[in-house]
Length: 224
Ligand SMILES: Nc1ncnc2c1ncn2[C@@H]1O[C@H](COP(=O)(O)OP(=O)(O)OP(=O)(O)O)[C@@H](O)[C@H]1O
Image 1 (tube, rainbow, N blue to C red):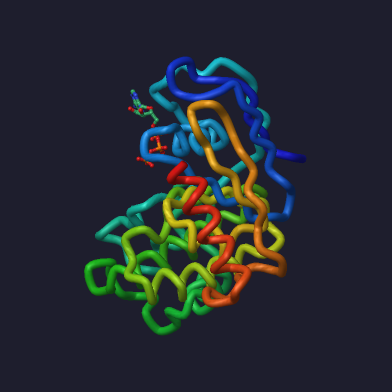
Image 2: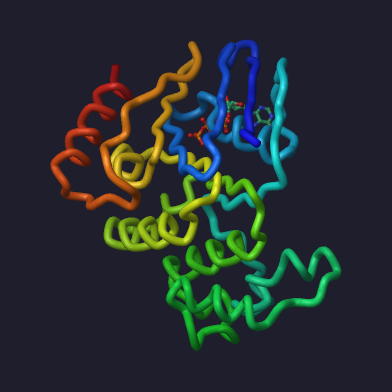
């Protein structure tokens, strides 16, 4: 199915139609406060605090936000297995270890969040999102708290691990959208505008000429 939001929030945006391509990573940009997180929350089936008029068709989703949102008293492995725990299901230790290894944290399963760096905490949050194994993955500025090098590294890791899933990622960073977006959309009060993504599979090289050109064009569009 194609998750979609069709409608408007009077005084904020729209009318618009957001339709996600199955198996592709869509990046959503736009000015602060224009309603990007609202669209994400509509797709997640969460309350938005605004008056949405329209229709939402969505799928079971996993949402990862700006702050890693880890439980400080739970270990890395317990945080990754949190979804199962909350549903009262037994944790799958093998799957959890595999996911912790996939985000490059093998051996740190028993650490508490306070014993990790910010980048490592974001990677735990990514592993937890993947552990949910939902058809739709919603990422709300997931790497915005990271420095440039970590943003590149963890963004690439996320794009590889999320390959083939239907993903909507809100970002403020045109460079990130140019590297990671199969599709790029810009939200304005008037609605959604598409922006051509550079050619080639994601993650793309940050310094590839087409990626730099898309970053510049996108920045111009955001400044317009
Ligand atoms: N719980 C709420 N109650 C009332 N208004 C809200 C609530 N949450 C968001 N809003 C309003 O909805 C608008 C859109 O917020 P939203 O978080 O979707 O924007 P955004 O584009 O994601 O912004 P940012 O880039 O700054 O995160 C804002 O103007 C905000 O004031």
